[in-house]
Amino acid sequence: FFFFFQAEDGIRDAQESRGLGDVYKRQGINAEYMGRINQNKILKEQYIRKMSIDTYNGGAIIGMIGKNCVALACDRRLGVQFQTIATNFQKVFQMQDDILLGLSGLGTDIQTFSAVMEYELNLYNLKENRKMKPNTFANLVSTTLYSKRFSPYFVSPIVAGLEKGQPVLTTYDSIGCLTKTEEFVVGGTAAETLYGIAEAFYRPNLNPDELGEIVAQILVSGCDRDILSGWGGVVYVLTEDGLSTKILKTKQT
Amino acid sequence: STQSTWGEQYIMDSLFAVQGKDFVIIATDSTVAWSVFRLKEEEDKIINLDDNKIMAMAGGAADRLQFGDYIQCNIHFKKFLFDRKLSTKEAANFTRYTMAQNLRKSPYQVNCMIAGIDNGEPSLYWADYLGTLQKVTKGAHGYAAMFVGGILDNFWREDLSFEEARKIVDYCIN
View 1 (cartoon, chains in turn purple, cyan):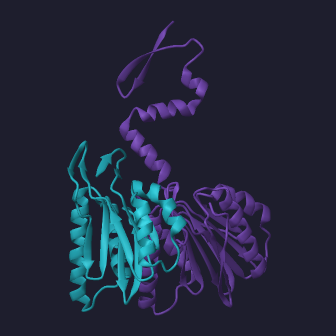
View 2 (tube, each protein chain N blue to C red; view 1 turned 90 degrees about the vertical axis):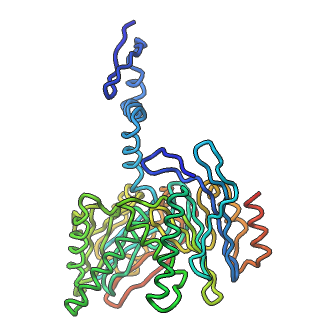
View 3 (tube, rainbow over the protein chains, first blue to last red; view 1 turned 135 degrees about the vertical axis):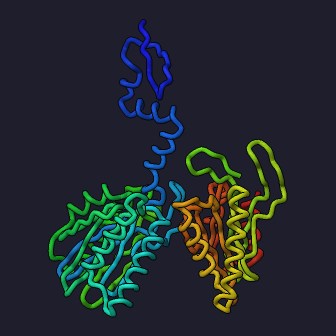
């Protein structure tokens, strides 16, 4: 035999080699990483925190552009990790009659951030005595997020709006990096699943009815495969004529 | 009581609540524990925010008492400030605002449920220690949430009479 020493934060543990190679190598890199994490309480806290802060409450949102219209859909679940608390949690907020703000991520920050944006919008209306343009609002979301750069809101916002009949759709990371898109965006714990389905079903220039239908199908399929999202959905379609809202039933899990 | 594992602490107190036709029932456990000791068995973890609303809290005694007193005094203060009683919705949102404000400073480790009757209409709010607020018709915190969640989902329906709700609560406690 030979012994090798595993150095862990200054503690040296002698461990017998099994001759077939380090046992961790057989289980893969992840096991060694977990072993290291578990031996250090502070690392473990940080690891758990990093793992779970965005997935703590769960959720799914998708935005898509059609012909002179834009759709934003979200699921309705509020959970605490794997336990479901409510099935009617609001994640899309109508900021103005031509601006929708969809939020996924940590529940408390969804509620705080939507209130902060509503406050900013109201202040703007009072100061400038006019409505805010959707593109302006999209930029405001970005700067508001960045103002908390070192203690961020744990949300992934999507802004959907109509400016002079032209659809606006933007998405951000949690510290405000703005991405404008002409097609679709997804967010939340179901994002990976939603990307695939959305890519398959998306077509440009959908009319409002088709858009609502397709976005609904994508959301339902996406949430079906994500345990942290689902329990119903809501689809908002914004057109020049106004906002239409539809509530969906998904698999009740 | 709480156990320190993560940076945050596991909150081990239990409470659950059921909304009926024109009433709300809230039940909490009454144990105060400190590591392996049971300090007290008859602790009242529900406070009156007003004469028509109550808040039940689950969490370590320190935060529970401090937070409870703070909310209670502020609701009382706002009654004079606005020259009218606050609705349950307003009280619940103020509670959420307080929790969310302190979240990135020194968070209150208190899960709570707020219940009230406004003009005969009952309402019940579930609030997480992070400041997530949701209006619900039934809910639970702590270990109770795992055990009674199923019972509440199974038996609850709209417009429960007091006897029916009382029976559900008995199922949960037992």
